[in-house]
Every structure is written in structure tokens, then in C-alpha cells.
Length: 408
Image 1 (cartoon, rainbow, N blue to C red):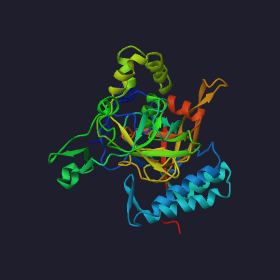
Image 2 (image 1 turned 135 degrees about the horizontal axis):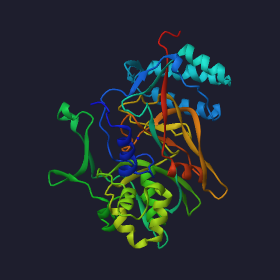
Image 3 (image 1 turned 180 degrees about the vertical axis):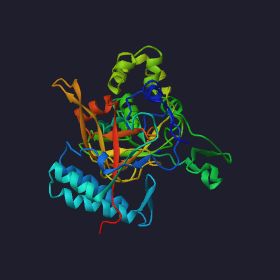
Image 4 (image 1 turned 60 degrees about the vertical axis):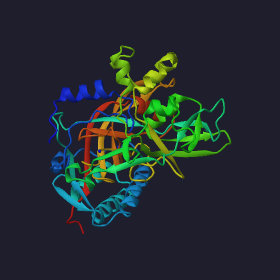
């Protein structure tokens, strides 16, 4: 989860590491990079194609492709998708994915796959920075938490549904200069004012009795990080399980608590991660209120039958679904990434980071996923997913594929 990009390589590193920091997940980074209006892709010659080695099974790729096809079948067949200077309609996007799906069902070998792509597909890579076409990859995951439908002494932190008085205003309706811009607030006394911030909601209780509580959690930090990830599973004390999914925010600016802890010398830049931030706050409970309220942004949820869902309202596939800036990259598009993943020891520590590559699909976005050099990979749920998502901060490459228009 979204002027040309001219920041030098070292500037990108400083922005991403010092100002955003990484315990990211979809929607954690809020340092917005300069916007690029039309595209972040350029078509490359077949001699520059990557090896297209995929480290996962074809079944998971098929599942992910079908998710994108389901989205594309819901939109107008004439809706357009931009790949660099080329534009394709939704009907062609569907044909492109189905053509690729038909071939991978044959379980092709690596050389067969490369030949197939060179003969049938156009390939694009990222542009817009001086980083050698590199993209900064982070990860997000689906937390699994313990909760209850009733508030008591054990479960006292509410997951709120979207408030009825939360108002979103599309500014482009008032002027073309605000195309793509919205503001969020609440309507009161014939005026729209900013919505309540985190402190007013969590510590002053201004929504108590006014907004539906979906469920109650045991721990305030669980609720905070659930909002960062944007979705999760809640195992209820009655034996049931529900999926909760992002359903809007209060529109307040996001501020990184990781940056705060580094700026104050409480964590080092080298060790920063979601896990280190949580550990620090658990060891210093007297600081939790101040640190969490540093970030006034607050997320509301809805219950879904399945989960987690991305911005296309299709179920995300672990390791295959990716979040990008959808102002720049084609929604639902087939992509290929090259970056690094962690190898985990038996005690759940990271042994090392190793290179990997695979096909993915653009099925999500986020408020922090801005510009041509940011990508967020969905890892799924479970211990490995949490570790990978919490620590991933790797540069790599991103390509998009689309069927040649003259293929019968």
C-alpha cells in the first residue's frame, strides 16, 4: 500500500533508514518521496531479461494469479493500465495472466520458462532514481492474536470498527489541481475538523460507547502493531476465529516510533526492527503511552470471511502478493523480484540473509509505500513471517511482465 525522482542513492538510504525506519509492513513508512505522475517503468530489451528463477512452487503462483484475474474481471474491460509508455486495457491484462497461467501449469523447467517469456512477453523494470534501478524492499505479515468479544479485566483494548462520523472528502471534486487528494475528518457544527488522534481515542476514551468494538485484545502493543500491519486473525476466547481487515484511518499523520526511539538514543539504527521496538517498550512500560502517542495515526477495521485482503479486495498469497505505489505501477500486474530473505535458526534468530527471486503480483498498497523505489512483500503468518516482515530491509530489483499485444 500510492516531477521525476532525483534523490541520490545515499539520500534514499538516509530517508528510508533514518526517517522511516523499518518495522514497516504496509503502511508504516510515512516519509513521502516526490511523486511521479504517470509511470515508474521502462521497457527493456530481451537481452536484459533476468533469469526468472522462482524459489517457490507453481501452485502458490497459480493461486495468486487467479486472485488478480478475479479483480480484473470486476472492473470495466476498457479500464487502462500503464506499463511505462505502453497502455493496456483490463481485457488484455486478463489475457496476459491467463496465458501465463496456462503455461506454468505445465510445470516448465527454467530454460523453457525463459524462452517462453522472451517469445511472448514484454518486460519492464523500474526507473526514476540513481540507485541502479534498485528497489527498497520491506515486509509485512498477518498477526494472530488472542481476543474476546466481551471486555473484561483480561481483554480491555478495543479493535474499533470505522466510526459513522468519519468523513472522507475527495478534493478533486472541487478542483482538478487536487486530483488524487483526499482529507479525512469529522463533521461538526457545519464544519469538517480533524478526526480524533491516537491519544484522544486510546487514552481519553472519546470513542467509548460511540463506535462498535469488533473485539477486545489483551495488550495495547498488540493493537498498535495490528494497526501497522493492517489485518490479522483474532482467536477468540469462545473458540471462534475472526479475520479483521483495514477499513480506514483517522487521517492523522503517521510518525515513526522507531525514529523516535533512535533519535532519543534508546535503540541503535543498526538494531532497529519491529521486534526490538516491542522488546524495548515491554522493558520500559512507563514509556509506552508517550511513545505510542507520538504516532497520532489510528486505524479502524472490519470483519471479513477470509483474510487477509489487499487493496484489490482479493486474498493475499504469502510470499507472492506485493504492495506497491498504485499511482505508478499497474494494479494486479504480474511482476518478478530479486532481493534477499532471512534464514532462521532453531531459536528463531536470523542466521543470514540469502538472495532469492520469484514471481509476484501487485495486489496491495499502503500509505507508506510511495514512489518507484519502495515495495512491501507479504510474508503470511506464523513465526517465520513475523521475523521476516519485522526485519526485512533489503535492496533488490523489480520487473513487470505483460503479454505482447500481437500474440494471438
